[in-house]
Length: 346
Ligand SMILES: O=C(O)c1cccc(O)c1
Ligand SMILES: CC(=O)C(=O)O
Image (tube, rainbow, N blue to C red; front, side, top):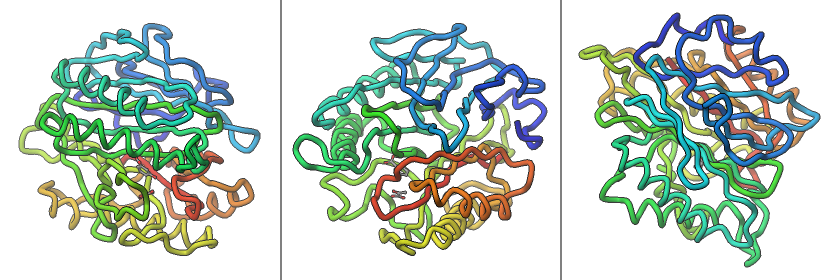
């Protein structure tokens, strides 16, 4: 657990990344209540309530990296439940929702249904601001039964669901769309009661939802980051900045094809531009903003195992020693992307 975790974020949402092997050792003083857990391990499992808490288990580790669990906590009392195939927990301010879709010949229609069910549920409970979404997609760059790339197939279904709910969820939140090591799609997200979320774009990048059709029939439905103001912090710009999976993309082009070191450095420059004060103020968030060194609860996705050492080196020399970083050896959503990085600034 990072030493940079605030003592008690009783009015927000925070997370730890802990080794699965020794979960009881890791969180020294886990203030707060568990809203949800995501276990990154060597096989997927249907989402379930475990210890009265939603647990999503996804296949994202292999012999290259160690299993970890991401634990989302809140200071408020939590109530968990089951809705169809999905599990959820809510605290009156925040909702965590997780669901798994098994392997499909074509993902479009079941992904649309999954997202429509999720958005309907979320809306009906009053968590009308999406905050952070993860889409963990097996065979992400492999073709589906019709020959369309699975990520593009997925993006169609998701875009159709967002179009159907555009009156209720007109704004897209931060997200990640990344490969896993088993077929099927694991989806989980955080949402909040209205009025606290601000969604950000990156001045160096075309908004993903405006990507041209050469990247797929429907563009990806996500924002580059979402700032969630703390509850009960009127007049103060304190909160958490959720940084989407970010890669070596300028405008809409992949840059530094075949150069993993340069892709990693460009990705970190993209994050720097995204989280800085200028970009926050451009989106109506006051305050000094953040530096890339403020990124914590970092997840680094590396397509090729042989690139792990060089990516680790760059991340560890850029980010402070007490940063929580987990590495995964999984495919990224474009075949020419070698690395993708996400995290949270607080
Ligand atoms: O499709 C997404 O949700 C997505 C979000 C961020 C990075 C990425 O590769 C994909
Ligand atoms: C990472 C990625 O796919 C994107 O930024 O569009």
